[in-house]
Length: 111
Length: 111
DNA sequence: TTGGAATATTCCTGTCAAGGCATGTTTGCT
DNA sequence: AGCAAACATGCCTTGACAGGAATATTCCAA
Image (cartoon, rainbow over all chains, first blue to last red):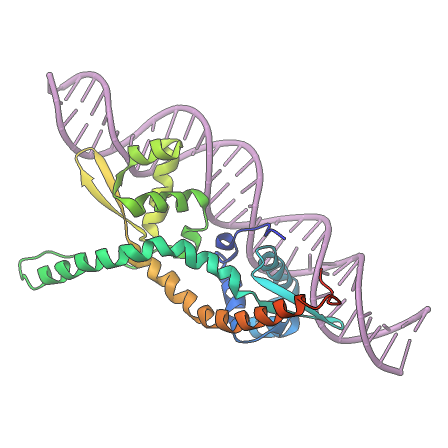
């Protein structure tokens, strides 16, 4: 089951990030999400569909209601993408320190 | 200098991620990026502008050419956003193991 | 099997972003 | 000053997406 949508575009929307934040705590039904978010139900359903296409979310059917659950493993893709940049942080921190040293110089200019 | 664009929407575009990947290695001028990416120059410039609005990138002017440089620190925001989900991975891994155990059961059903 | 609750889907509209093309701007060179 | 290189910006068209409203679907209970 290959995802039909990439994680990056899925989390680009603020509302969808809100949904993920909620699902981070616990599984939730659509109605609960609607109430928590204060959005229209069709709107929430559509965002859930998008999250589902990215496989960031998983459904558990329980009678007439559907419980959505976070699939955190898909966020590992993000984690992995981030990896190469982590190394850069260390280098840049050195640069920042040198920069802060320059701030002690009263003639230094900043904007 | 508060960013006028969030990191999430900035990295949502594949081309922009490609650019970041290139800048991960070293600072590059627009012309170099154009050649590496095989895209039209105005196109690349516009993506660089977008990355700049998210402050994911920094310019160094050198005569007529502009060298763009990665600002990895802005990706920390992503890292921080990811933090709450990291904890979920551990829990979910337990569930996965239980799931795999069930796979040994020949009567177990899967779709 | 009829009704209602919970949710999904469709249609419509406005907005925004990407790509292509043309043009403006700055800089260095002569 | 004039020209060319290196970029940026503006305009246009097209496609994708978000939000709203209405409608369809699925399920359970009586």
